[in-house]
Image 1 (tube, rainbow, N blue to C red):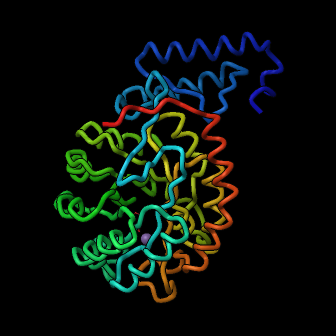
Image 2 (image 1 turned 135 degrees about the vertical axis):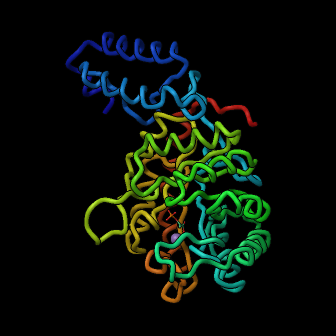
Length: 339
Ligand code: PEP
Ligand code: MN
């Protein structure tokens, strides 16, 4: 509750502390706004924490929250990421065949997804695992997206692949293993396609923002951030979703933030619960793996939802989407002019 912590000091004084911080930040050329982050300075330690947050983005002039509080909407083929509708991106981990990607595209479009995902070039931990169909996979993904009216997203692993992936896709994904690949970020910065930048599996929020800054400093303003889980302890989940990174990132930057509940958990049974959490916490969208026969998938089958499971998840998310839209309307912040 925003008000509760303030009871111990006069509201006027609390307001003054808040205003002073805002003004200080604005004067330094950046401003953190207060979106979902309930900044409530009841003591100087919290003000210090807020100053540390500010310091972490002070030098990142492209990604840090603008002084007028504007946020960015990424637009591709009628889909707006960071706008007033929650965006679900779904599809197979890897494109395996025409039949597989067509069947998945048809089903996810029918269930309400608005972007089709599918890997052509697959960065796998084992060199012996399926590495993707490459160019053939990109062509099939494009065909399936066009057939069902969905823009498509796929990963580029190297700077040398950027041109090819840009030719066949609408959004280019930077995988967790590539977040720190400077040559890749520079090449993607020079292209005009929107970029979905996944957080490195051992990267801090600050490092994710630095990678986003690299893309933008090289000239590409269309960056979407993605929390896909980080390495922690234990083997019962593949990663740990740093769910609170979502409001923290919204507090620090004007860029949209989405969650990948498939890689964050590594288990399909946990995907719907994390998807609900992502909607509830105010993420801008989801990236979800779906496969017509997960048990036969050539990659990430254990975390891929079967089509009926995806349909059920989307159905159950409906009331959450409704609440999300109401919350968005309340938190109206200005939108940056399209570039
Ligand atoms: C993927 O999206 O299939 C993928 C490889 O993701 P990540 O880079 O997050 O592991
Ligand atoms: Mn995958």
